[in-house]
Image (cartoon, rainbow, N blue to C red; front, top):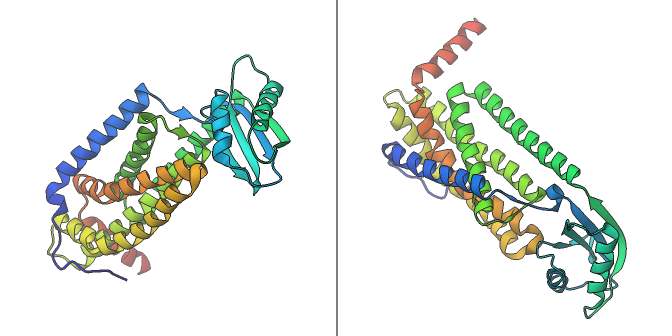
Length: 310
C-alpha cells in the first residue's frame, strides 16, 4: 500500500555529513544535560509511600493533586486504579516522617475537600533499596534489548548493519533521556517502558530500509552504494509516512487526552518516534555507507549459499 510513489530518487547521501553532524550535536547536548542535571526519578526508583483510597463516587483527581501540592507534595502522582472510584496516590520520601504519619496527614487533607470522602484501602512503603533494584533491573533490560537487536541484525544482514542500527537507536534513547533531564520531567517505570518500546520501534524502520538496500544491491547492478541507499530510502518513504503517521496519531491522542497518568509515557513515545524516523533513515544509512557496505558482500553470501546447496 502506498500513498504516493516518488519516481526520482532523492539524494539523501549527498547530505549525509550534515545529517550526522546535526545528530552528533543533539546527542552531545543530551549527554551534557544528563551529566549536569540528571534524571528526575519517580517514587518507584527513589522510594516513597503508596496509598490506595476509595470513594463512594468518582472524585476529581485535579483537586486531590492540588491538596497534595498544598501539603508540600508537588511531585505526588494521583491516578485512578481499577475503577473511577479507586485512586492511587504515590508520595516521595520525606525525612523524619514515618509512613503512618504520612497516611494520616494525607487523609486529613483529603477530608477537607468537597464531595465524597476518602476511605483508606491500603498503604505501602517503597524503600530506597527497592528503587535501586528497579533501576538496576531497568538498566539490565535495556542492555539485553540492545544485545538482542545487535545479534538479530548481524544474523539477518551483516555486522555493518548491526553496528549502524544500534548506534542510531541508542542515539534515540539518549535523546529521550536528555529531554527528560533538561526539563526535569519525571522518569518513571512507564517512561522506561516507552524507551524500550522506542528501541524496538526504531529498529523496525531500520530493518525495512536495510532490507530494501539488500534487495537493490542484488537486483540493480549499475548503481553505486550511495545511489542504492538513496533508492532504498526513497522507495520506503510512503510506507514510513503511513506507519509512523498512524502510530503518531494514536500516541498524540494519549498525550493530549490521556490525562496526567499517560502524559510522560506518551511524551517519551512522541519524542522517540520523531527522532526514530530521523535516525533510522538519515543516521543509520550513512553509517552503513561509511563502514564500507558493498554489493560484493551480498553476492558472496548468495554464492556461499548456492555452493552449500550443491
